[in-house]
Image (tube, rainbow, N blue to C red; front, side, top):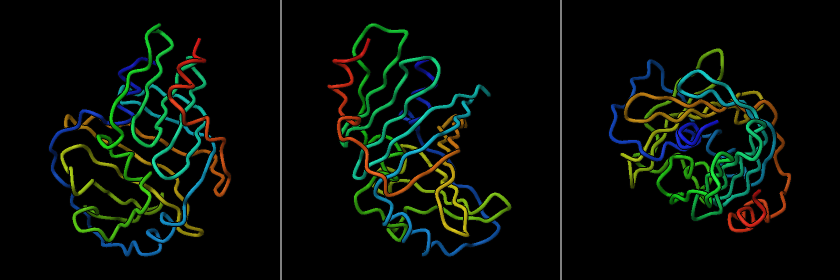
Length: 200
């Protein structure tokens, strides 16, 4: 995996885009309640990059603001959000991890302390199909910083995937192949400085 693929995961350079049109309105109240209650999670993921390449790995989530992606290949590739910044670890580079403000990525919406889909301007739309309910969101305070589409199963409600789209239409999808909620992770997993110190 190259640095470009990691950065596209976070959609850190997205600019304005047009909101999609949805054929069917969906009540997201139950999904909102699920997201509010989602505090800790971990599992496995499958990432599809804009060029069609696929990567797998493990993730750990702890609100507010913390998530860690560990890629199976190449060994040592990671993305860590510590609540303030995002650190991108590239095993092909001997330099310190590249850091970006977490607030600049739509992923920060999922990691908010008090996420509410009722916030004006956040939800661009929602639709339902055989794969589940898809909710398209932006940060109302920075709508030009990117767009995220979250996918949920309905019975029971559970986060299944998300996709981030850049201004050029490049789309990176993350499907959760395993998900355990309510499982606390060691806080050190989200420490960028500690990870950098131990990085090979």
